[in-house]
Length: 328
View: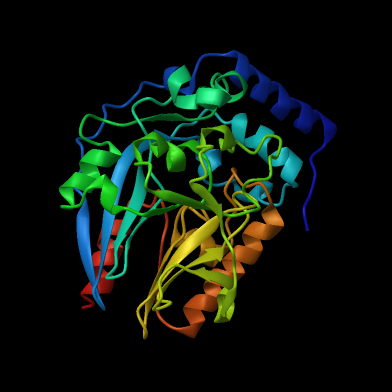
């Protein structure tokens, strides 16, 4: 059950949101921390011939309420959540924008593209420059350090960009599609059909998607337990795409099934596992009810068999993966 706020409180949040949009970019609201040194990708041998590469590509700073709403505001209806989030002036430190490279015997699959040093420039937003170019930097602060770009990260894995024949986009927010231009013409992109439907105030950067036929829509033609309808990405059926809506209406995740265990690359379905367990709603979700349903789906999947769920901005990803691959 959602709740509303009194008229004075609603007006107060809307007023502070409007001030944020007419004011300076988020980077000027608090001292911008030094950029972290470009991290190295890490390889994790999952067995079955599969290696999962963690690629920290770019960084982002967000509002604290972007990451999680306070308890007294957790049940806000969908229309109020964005103004309440935008009225917060507290900014996080730098968070990794994690992309994933699945080196599978059948193919190389990239999940998301991370963020780019070009964030905030007209060239970055392209056809969305007029509609989003001035708005986005008021919502988040994002960039990438030298050597922290997607081609450099992929090269460090020993692969070439041309080796990647598929890039699955969990959704189309900037820190997930920031390096689309770096993908070669041979790489296809997989986006859910729900994500491709324009929605007001969604933050989706659909104009950044190439218009040359490389974008394909997810077709869910199989069923997998708690995940429901899925799209297999390998002939073995051990890598597949599942719907995890809420953060955006078309948000999707990638599952690597290892038989007795599995890994879910869950994008921004949440910021960390605790949010899923506790039912904590981030400030930046399009649909609260869908988010809670996705949490329930992830919890039920974990009850079926041991499941490691990894989120784009979780700083514990490397440690969690290491413990999963080599359990104590």
